Image (cartoon, rainbow, N blue to C red):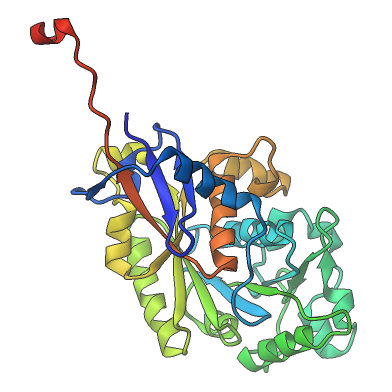
Length: 328
């Protein structure tokens, strides 16, 4: 039986997925077969994930999570990747940059603790540290909301205001965070431009359907025009049964269309809806789900500025017995 192995390009880390997770999910219709690595190297590769990932690049890393199309999983990705980074031991500030339609606080279960927002900070009604909401489960994770639901923003609020906010986080007395994660609103209007202004790297979330891919391609061009060259992709809500029936594109097909480095592949998981309604991100589930593990792997690669590629391990030939000559 064939199994599927995901390899990180820099450190040869691998994650062995169950055989039920179809190989067509990650390979194109005519995959290139490779020989399986030795058993010893497989074990060593898997055990590398037991160490703490090594932070690459200058801190703070300012990452915008975007897509263009709504409903593909940007906020879910922000919540799960952000908490995964905190669990790895890094300090994280997640900014919900969706003006008037915030949802990140709901996914994190922090909606009842948001008393102040960036609008109050800019108006001088509170300090920045009062607007930051610290997660009780992981004290090195903090949430910052731009505005309250259905509230009106100041006319002058834009990219410059968000840059000032990021600079204030860098110079705060308790120290600069390792990561500033910006949850970008849907669309490519003023809210999008505001969210990407302070970022120096981007994670593009998409699903394997043509509408999401066309929007993702458009957003990629806008990010590059804004000077953001470090763009990686997460393919979300991958369904193996539809790929097997050739009703959904494979991940390699998506990668060939967009031409981006692959940060992670998230399978479709019904647990996402349950975790959203509970305000309890997938990565905190015990036992972990396959989607939760995939988010953790994506966070690992983000830390080390790594990417992934997928190869299909060659199928082992079936043993032929005496009755095989008679079709047995």
